[in-house]
Image (tube, rainbow, N blue to C red; front, side, top):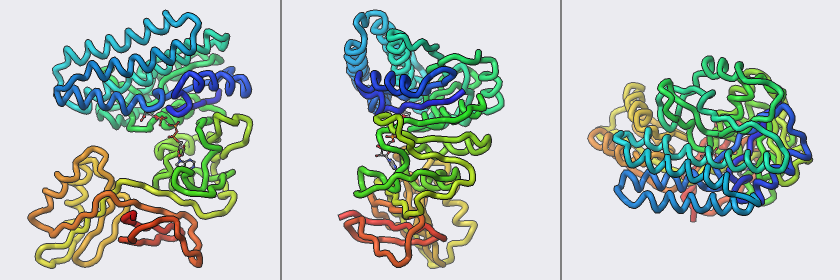
Length: 414
Ligand SMILES: Nc1ncnc2c1ncn2[C@@H]1O[C@H](COP(=O)(O)OP(=O)(O)O)[C@@H](O)[C@H]1O
Ligand SMILES: N[C@@H](CC(=O)OP(=O)(O)O)C(=O)O
């Protein structure tokens, strides 16, 4: 069995859905498990619904907007869209009913029960479309298979339970299911973290001992830099799992960082390919591969915060103090992307996905002098060449660090 994953960019409109059919026709689809994300930016739109709901604003109008976007796509796909449209309508009716009767004040719990709609609808549309053109498939609710704990928005997968569920599945079929979703022990929906559908595909590949896994993207494969921010990017033909983990960790957003671990554990070959040119080789990721070609790789993480703490009384920043600071960061789910310390100061490059930075800074007020530079960029160059002078950014360099073959620079962009 092979595992395919198509992300939001590949199913952003009716033409995208039709293109999946041509990819499948050119590559074959027997004994395949296909994971699909929400269409385009639907997850962002559903996040807005949750925010409006908690802000006591008109969340139903936002839901209707998302409903109509999907109905439009469906109308462009089917000669007779009535059946699919009524299924789409039902998902949204259920969503509204859930929000009207919900009593839980837990934002993260409600978030997961709402945003899952994006993946449930996209897979319904794609599955119905493929069946309508003779590509027979079976739609699965992934929440019946992938089990997690109760960490809403960042569900931790119970691999043993999940593996048992997949073992019961009938072989040699073409399955379509949702990325990004799971369910907790009480069968409430959980999500695996934003952009988590790549990870879902890897979990499924792991559980089914897949021959290989391919994620289909709008780029030719893994490039040595994000083409949105860098010119003259080059395709990396081969990379090792370790290199892919490093690239993803530093922010190469083409692959979700958690994706590699399950694949590496079972030695499952992993491809990143273009859904525009499905017959091109793309990037192959395997154990013990050497990076090919051997060139520097550039990564940028935007919207970072550089926080510098200096002890108010000029005492040393001891391990004890650092450990307390990190406990608070962990509790507030603030990610540290780079750190540097001296005797009396500690600089941290922080990513504040959940808007908790002010709470963090408040907790430090009494013990530290705090300086903050918001909205900075963190550039990372893997395999940098010492003699090269890099001029890929415009702005002021705030901090620089070299660890082995990795150079990192924090920049206040001009
Ligand atoms: N090193 C890289 N190589 C290729 N693409 C990259 C890289 N770093 C970032 N990207 C970006 O990743 C995008 C594809 O990933 P993503 O948008 O998450 O796809 P999807 O949501 O469809 O799965 C590309 O359009 C590209 O801008
Ligand atoms: N739809 C989810 C999960 C995901 O992985 O999406 P994508 O494959 O489009 O990055 C998100 O936007 O976070």
